[in-house]
Length: 144
Image (cartoon, rainbow, N blue to C red; front, side, top):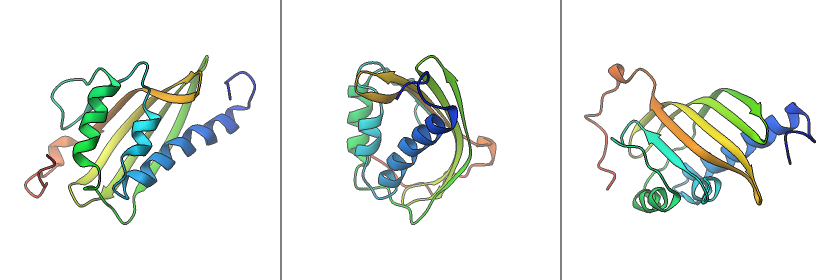
C-alpha cells in the first residue's frame, strides 16, 4: 500500500488500524505490537519518562522487554487522530488516555510512518505528556 495507489481515506484507515492493533496488544500487557510496528531499519523515540532520545530498534526492544507483561488497562481512549501524508510517509497524531496498572496515561502521540519493503513502519515515535505541569507521579509504580 503506497500513498500513490490508494485514497487518502484508505491509507488513513490503514495507518490508524496499525496503531490501534499495537495499542490493543499494549494494554493487554503485550509489547510485541509496537516491537513489530517500530522500524528495525531506522528508528528514534522520545517519551516523557525518558531523558534522552532512543536512537535504534535494539534499544527500544530492550526497554519493551522490561514492561512486557506488566502494563494493563481495561480500556483506552484514542482521541482526535489525524494523518498527514508525504511520499511514502505519513504522520499520525492523536491523544491517548488510559488508567493502567503502572501509570495514568494522558499523552500527545506522534508517529511518523514510512513505507518500507515489508510494509508501513514507524521511524519516529514521540509520547509527550499532555500538560505535564498537571501530572502527579506520586502514585506511579516503578516500571523497572
